[in-house]
Image (cartoon, rainbow over all chains, first blue to last red; front, side, top):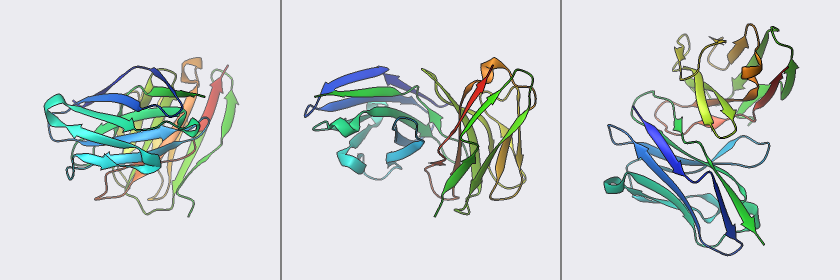
Length: 113
Length: 112
């Protein structure tokens, strides 16, 4: 069965600092991997996705993630945090076919001025 | 293009009352999903519909029923609401041959 583990329910960074949000997955087949962002009182918006093409994936708002099969990881990074990045971030996995996304528990990112 | 819409946005129920959450998408997607979001729990799948006319249970189906009314609409029904069903409910859809799910704005439900 697929599963996702997000390390750290809350991450706090200073404005301009590196953002690193960790995600490890478990899947018996090559997975499709996703990062979603949720701003307060809103729905989920896709940040980026890995679908077996390039292992380094660039998304919106300057975020990127690298698929590392040997580490079963898909960590999300951004070189320089902005106040507007404060939100909750969810990593999700799906294998082939019609299977739904399985989500991690989320990481709340705070950005300190 | 409205994407995925959900009604209502907010609802307060008393224990034992019933209600239906509505979801519609205008992207001609085959697959639709209902999740609930609780603090510290992420999103958990309640039910999904891989295509019109089919539905399947997810991780937390107890206390819920669904109807895939047509290709556009997928409703979630609570027959007898319980305080444990206080949550934010999200509907999502996905097109065949694509990978990502598109989410609606959510329904915030409180059961007292």
